[in-house]
Amino acid sequence: MRVTTNSMMRTYNNSLGTALDTLNASRERVNTGRKYARSYEDPSSALRAASLHRKYLSMEDHIDTVKNAQSRQDTAEGSLRQIVSMVGSTANDETLKAISGTSDASARQTYAAALRQTQQSLLQFANITYGDKYLFAGADGKNIAFSQDDHGNITYRGINVSTGEWPGHTNAEGLNELARLSEEKLYVDIGLGMQTNNGGIAISSDDFNGSSAFNISLPGIKSFGFGTTGTGNPGDPKISSNVFALLGEMATELEKGPAFDAELFGKMRENLTACHAGLTDLEANMGVKTNFLEATAERAEDDLLNLNKQIESVEYLEPAKAITDFSYSQYTYNMILKVGNSLLSSSFVDFMR
Image (cartoon, rainbow, N blue to C red):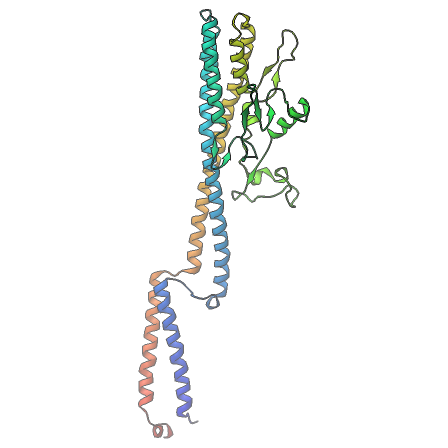
């Protein structure tokens, strides 16, 4: 069978082109370190890499959310720590001095002024912001949490924290609303597989599965108390359960001069001590949530590192393998060139023999 020069040249050119493409591809792999430059070169790896990249970007978003929640939590915890310290000092020191046998009406006026100053300082800590959000305003971070009206009454989002007085509503409705606000939730996705309770679309925060997300809401009304203790009957006076309003009531009692009721003040002080105990427990619970966020962030960063390793294994070559492949491609290409030189030096007559 005769082999024509044209047939041989076509075969040779095809082989040479293939070898050159392989050489260029291997050279590019050495330069970039990637297994492929275009998805059609390795469809299965490209598809897997795309999936891993989506997971990587999603994990980065979760980490950002966790770190933001951590910062919020740290800011709120720092503020609460100051409140706990000041309330503890007031309950165990200043108020005790105010009812000691050596305190006269003038001294009580001084202690009353100190209590009002403490009240104002605590309100500032309770209205602390993170960015443009009030941290202790529950799910409504755009509006200030605690305010004080012209009569000195403390309100939470417009509702009197002691009586429940709320324009256009009964006091009972106001207290019920405070109870509802105390349970407000605001969930964020931190990579726990955020889900709704019924598997459908969430209409409100109550529709989310609490174990699948993190609640960043900090309802100040739950933290600092609302309503009153006592029935209001003789011998059982109503005393505010809100630490800020209570300090105001204690200051008012101290300012009564000869009408000062030491027994009533003692009951107020007991309420303040109970408020301090509740705030101490709250501080401990916030510490637990902070530790949880720290652990979640560490786990997420570990997952991110593992995803990065998987992406590298799918998309990138070991340098030694890339160089070896390039060397082999270079050798193959040179050999084809050498064979070509031999073929091209032969004449048509040689093929006819």
